Length: 113
Length: 111
Image 1 (cartoon, one colour):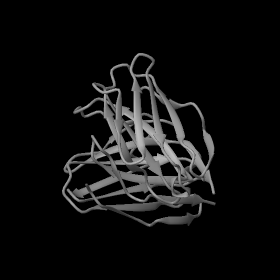
Image 2 (cartoon, each protein chain N blue to C red; image 1 turned 135 degrees about the vertical axis):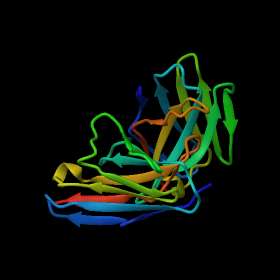
Image 3 (tube, rainbow over the protein chains, first blue to last red; image 1 turned 30 degrees about the vertical axis):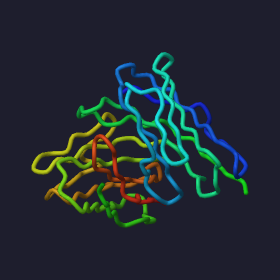
Image 4 (cartoon, one colour; image 1 turned 180 degrees about the vertical axis):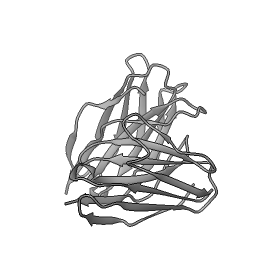
């Protein structure tokens, strides 16, 4: 499959700040996008997803924005907490298909108290 | 959702030996996926394991190196054979194709 890349490998923020993690995808056919959080020593955990018929989706303290024109995805974390420190991966795939998600490289978020 | 138990959680192995990683799911699933995550890298799919048929391997991965078993709909094993230091990685099993659920991973160090 085509690759999904992330712009920044490491992001350091202060506790309480808002964090923005970016992702660029290359497969213009992808219509489903997922963000995962991977804490040290654990497997990736689903955070939030968005389908291509939406530009924005909000969860608890997290918002995902999708710009299909430039094939860009971002994850915004409000009031970042030390527990948010982890590696964040985006993934893209075709909704409902048998295709396996393609994972990006990952961004390490470090939250300083 | 699915709960996935993977073991061992970590191991240190001598080069040339083999390690079998087990993955148990709390529900029946058609497909199980095995990933490798090299240090500081993202997840790379090794193979898809279907019950009752041979696993489907991705480019760069072969059955002789990574034999997979899928004896029933809740269990799978991945063996890393004839290990070298380059096999040092985290190995993850996963289920689900829309929302993927992962085990906690097996951190393998080959010395």
